Image (cartoon, rainbow, N blue to C red; front, side):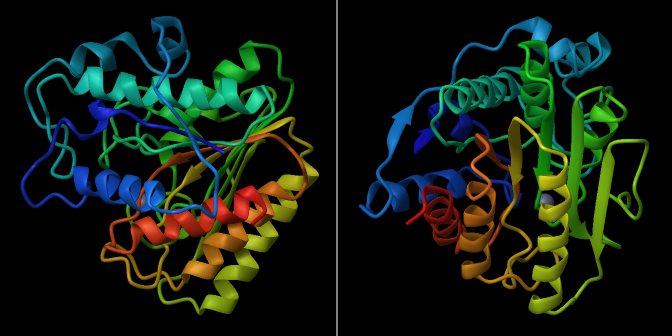
Length: 287
Ligand SMILES: [Zn+2]
């Protein structure tokens, strides 16, 4: 198991914002203090312009340098473009690791799955998971799936991958909820599995299992995961019902078909995030 992280992802913060550096700091400490999952630590790789421009407009890149907030949830920070690029560099390093046969998890921020081609939103500036999926396709993979179990719909990933040959997007998320999309399937390749707020844990698991079954039918050569831990029963930002064991089960389920995978941290705002990530990694690692 390779974890990709570095100090750049804790270099910016906004008072009171739930997407904060402590998410990473506490998770890193938890992972360093355990021996169940053997971990190799790596730094993000380079992030070239061409990879970003497959997913985003030059206008969005220019906008990231303008010192004005993007929306109420998504503040401007000096050098936010550099932080977002580091997160993409980690996603691309995770991709390289997965292609080489080792499971990878990117423990970075900012997250990416709400960023659309032209817009930063929902704590996201550039869409790391979509960029990694498009990079894999441009490097010769024929079938790449994105699985998004963050409690919020990955609207940006969907918009970027919509009808892209070789790509498929599978998302399980609360609906109604932010960002208000994801109530139905879109185009030929985007499959949405909405769950109502306060859906029981058993029902939530069944929906996740259906989405994973559907994903297996796609026969991907590679699976990129938006690993969001905010469907947790005690997460402050949504009304999910998942417990720690469910994240273990998700890791196991993603490991089991034997398809190479990379996972990128998305949401997860409860103080239990480190335990949830460790449970997921144990599942992914087959422990
Ligand atoms: Zn989320």
